[in-house]
Amino acid sequence: MVSTAICKSTLWISLLHGCLFLIAGSGTEAPTQSPTLEMSSQKFRSELLQEWHASPDAPYFDANTPRNITGLVGHPVRLLCRVKNLQNRTVSWVRHRDIHLLTVGRYTYTSDQRFEAQHKPRSEEWALRIRSPQRRDSGQYECQISTTPPIGHAVFLNIVEPETKISSGTELFIQTGSTINLTCTVKHTPEPPTSITWTHRDQIINFDSARGGISLVTEKGLKSTSRLLIQRARGSDAGLYTCGPNNAPLAAIRVHVLSGEHPAAMQQGCSKSNLDISVSLCLLFTYICFLDFFHYDT
Image (cartoon, rainbow, N blue to C red; front, side, top):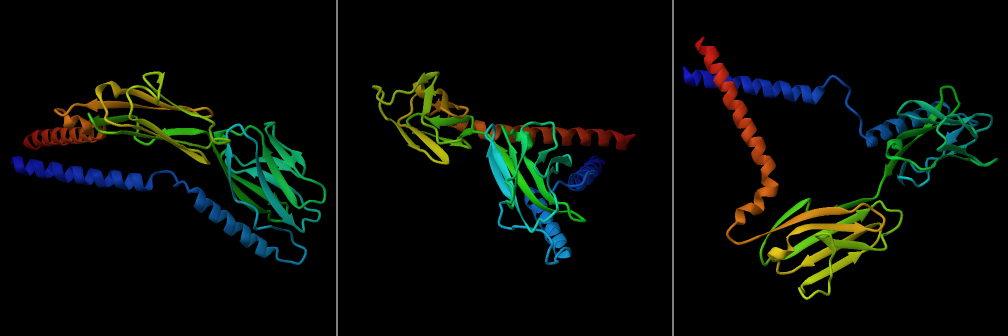
């Protein structure tokens, strides 16, 4: 009887897992397309509509203008389309997120003063300029020509902000006598940081201290890295370390220096979450079997 109840519980759990998988896979909402798929769809539609208008005097877009633009938070960004043979048609910019008409010709049709239409007379270039862009401005925009139906050139905008990250995560467990190796990466800054400062317990690290064995290697570029090495780790090296570029947020990591009799603690940081999940699933399975067993007896 007990084995029958357990089998029933196991089958019930399997069916529940399958249902949850189907729900997660399908959902009640349409799946969100990735930017790449969305851009491919827009490109296909644009090319198809241009074929419909393939008469000698039909306007068309210059296919060499960029379709993916990356900008920095707070720094002006410019989206561009180049139109050939426009004649008496009009060029507009539309934001796809809310189907919001932003510009028509040389005029701006939005109350958000950060957006601005840019066009020089007799020029083939029609630009949308965004002053002080924010992360929320990321998404798809479309340059449209007022044909019937309209044809468009889609541009995907990605607004990023300065980011600092220490590759070891937020905690590092290391044995006494080992080398502490911390690598800090800085990206999405207007220019490479002029300085990257490391601190330990709120004190700037002194590379000429009597402790010795401390070195720093820094490489600056579009993505800057700073590598801090502390040889022969000891208990006094434990604590909070921060990496602080002059033009980006700082990142922090807490280092634990363990003595030889506690090697198992080195795995605590990475395995704790997995252990919690395993315990939760085990308890859930036991509870379901318990309920099903009593239900079967009744």
